[in-house]
Image 1 (cartoon, rainbow, N blue to C red):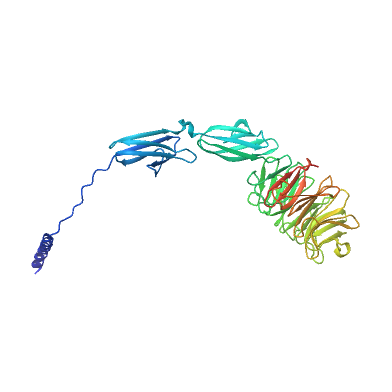
Image 2 (spheres, one colour; image 1 turned 120 degrees about the vertical axis):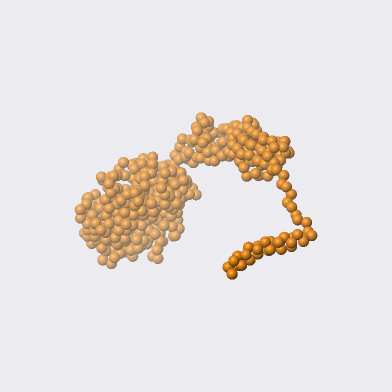
Length: 486
């Protein structure tokens, strides 16, 4: 039985195949056959150019190739090869290619005089020196620069007492492109911003000058910046022991130590080493520091969001106003036992013989309860910045010992952020609507972006150095340097 099964399996395949053959053999239709493909053309054009990098077009169509490259497997015939590149004139060559010919096409673009272009450069004022791609040309505006290869060029203009100005100038084949630039006068105003200097941020909050003339600048979120007149150095929580990156105030003591008040405590910096004071290692009960004031008797007075603090270098003493109305934003010591305090929402207090007493708004008729800054002039008048609140509108006021004398510049919605008085009795008020200057006779000039070269109207602080330069911090416009005419 086993042998029979094997025999059947062996003959079943030939029978089936025979049937299939018979079926196909019985069809009357012709069997289609593919024609034989002709051999591929072997024509070849290799294209190079000086300079390289030109787009290759064949008979008006972009091949997607750039020089040097090849067009392969093309038939005999006539071909127009065009080289294209931005700012260059097109170059076209007609090639008659024989069958299976390999053709080398070399095009020297720079040997064609019509490929070159010119620049005509002017500045206001004239006579600025010209550099192109960082090469000084020993040429001065107005000036024609001829026979330049097409492309984009970095052109810098330099003139004494004016800011260097850099532009991108475009050169095109067989054209003269004109550029005229107005240079910014730096004899009176200079701004230092991220785009034009090494400063780390444009959002600045405070500024002071130390005993060596170095500028120390507080920022909204980038820590502390040192400017020595050449370079900007940034100290932040990532590269130093500064306790917080939001700087509210900066003060310099007699030993040229820099005291920085932040939202996270105090940083004390001697130029090399840091000491940090916070709730963990000092008498501070609030780490939000608004003002740091030195009284001349070896004490540091600190205005915080919670209270008034005294530090004598060893001991900390915290003073709390009985009703908790002591968000201190301004401090001035009239005598060893009498300190004037300006608060954020509760008006003026006098701290005398370690006791708080309210300097009544109702009695003394000062503008509002909201005080942002406090200082004293050459005649020992006390000057205050008041902001608008429900009790009145913003003002700059001075207390002459008998009454408040108030000025109401701008609009009620403007913030008056800081007041600084220089040794010529000029009052510099930083506001959200520009820099206000009351001179010794209290004549007002308001510097804004509309009538000066301020980079922003949002002024946060100012200080004047020993050379008479006013340094101004802004939100959004970086650091400004101003040399007043008087």
